[in-house]
Image (cartoon, rainbow, N blue to C red; front, side):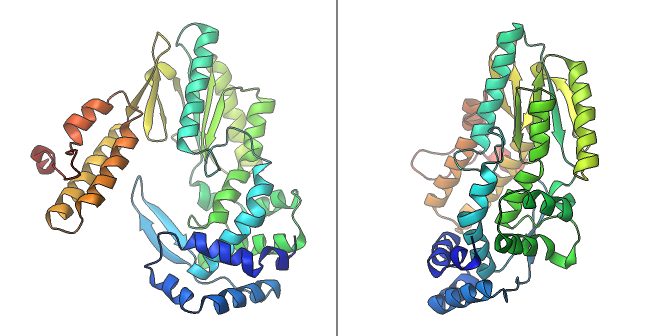
Length: 354
């Protein structure tokens, strides 16, 4: 597609409506909306004429579940990025990905990834008739900051993108905060799709060359399930070589081989298969501590009148949905996360005082 087809007024307007969701109160959104038709029209012209320049990235940190630097573009640029992802990038990358690459894709996500892991564990149990099954968990060291621009562009050039589409992608890849020559900003929607694609070769290598049937990936978290520990050791070595030599990436120290009956840490939970083939899901200790910390904060701001019962009710449902997976859900609801049913908030004092 050419730029005039991608960045038509209609396409940009549709992207704007998606971008403003839950952001209507933000100053930059209000300013963009104050002269909406002109701003969208000017953005379209700049892109079609190739006079468009990316705005300055805003930097901030998030601290849950761990400290991360987020670099986000101004609202106008986010509209452009959303439009490009919806019209071009998503569909062309989607068809290249394996089924069990689960992050940031339609009808997939964390629940899908967990279900796939459980299916794989049950399948291995049925084959071997016991739970002496091993897993290899691979994790990339500083994945987003380590993505090599030239390697990524070479991958994209092998896909059926037009010259105009490559012009946009090269701009988004090369024009980084602080003129960084490596890495992708976490705040860009395009970065998510580029990150899914960047390890796609590893996915195919694991499935097709290493012949691992039971494999799932969520962004840079890779889980391989197999009966043979020695073969997983070989797989680890081969994956490490592939990442080092082909992708300019390194596995971090969280990469490990373990027994599934001792539990696999994946997406905030510990997944254990017992001797009867039953899968038990527990909340990780760090997740419990983090939730208790959030609830203490919620208790304080509720008592100070900063949030209402409806907000607390929404947070309660979020907590309950997160622990619903676990074998400890009833105990956690009763002991650690107690709420009254009438939408009011009641917190056990001993947890606040801890």
